[in-house]
Length: 108
Image (cartoon, rainbow, N blue to C red; front, side):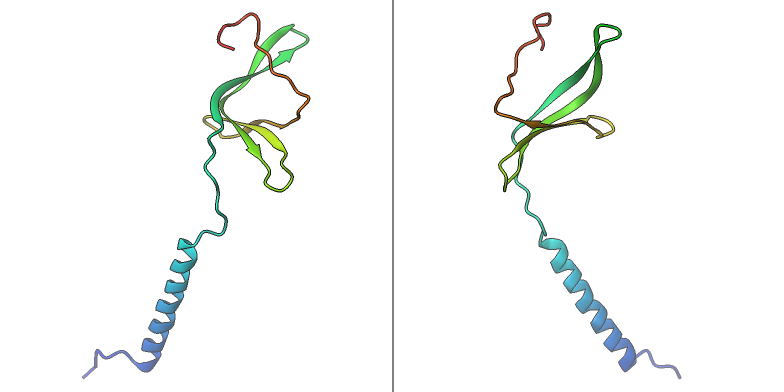
């Protein structure tokens, strides 16, 4: 008659498996990198100027964020398109830069 008792090999393998799963769960719970929540993000549209047609053309629409590097302190403006999440703008922000309104549009 066959016994339903697990053999020593099965018990040992089961114990190793449960120990491995416990270690995996510990690694999953403890994040490797802690990220801070970004409060500097806005919805926007990005335009580029077409010299040949002498007009502004839409480059993308999505979320704009200002990201500051912790070690160097440099700030970058990063914009991702809403649907594809592709980066459409990634520029270093310098203290010498200025921002001004577009004179022909009240939404700008």
